[in-house]
Image 1 (tube, rainbow, N blue to C red):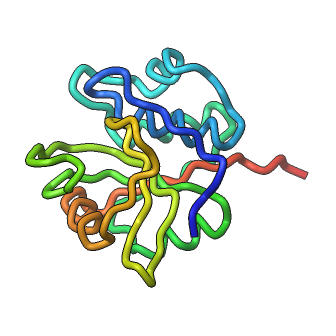
Image 2: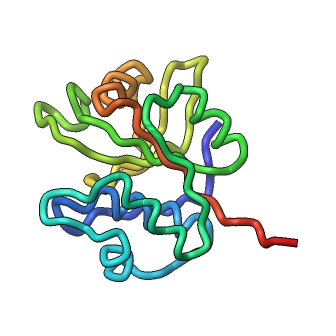
Image 3: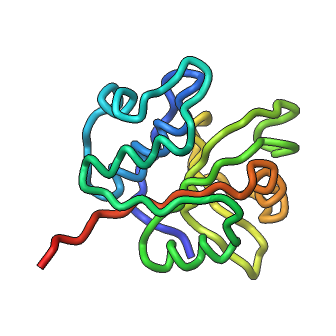
Length: 158
């Protein structure tokens, strides 16, 4: 299962991986607020942007479901409902990162349990989606306490 019509964005600053991930998800949901405005809204830092700052997107009428210690089923259930998942990771032994290990954020857009692969949009790279081993991904996700966030439009009240 792989989300289609997902547009890739690259991070513009070294510390902007979470900003670029939020931009990708918002664009997928039909919301375009601009990269600079998103940096302001999420209070992007010099070295990183805290994962918890995603909750500030609620100002835009979004619902944010996030947490730590997520289960891998969170990817299937949300993707089945047409929602990508932002994951906080550490790039420990990730092939496409070579020997570089860093704290990072990526967007999960697909998972194939039969082939044991996961599909991510990694804002550090141009190519997307990147297919990687599910085990390789899970090790990096575990290193960041299985952080996740799902952004969705808040349904209007009746």
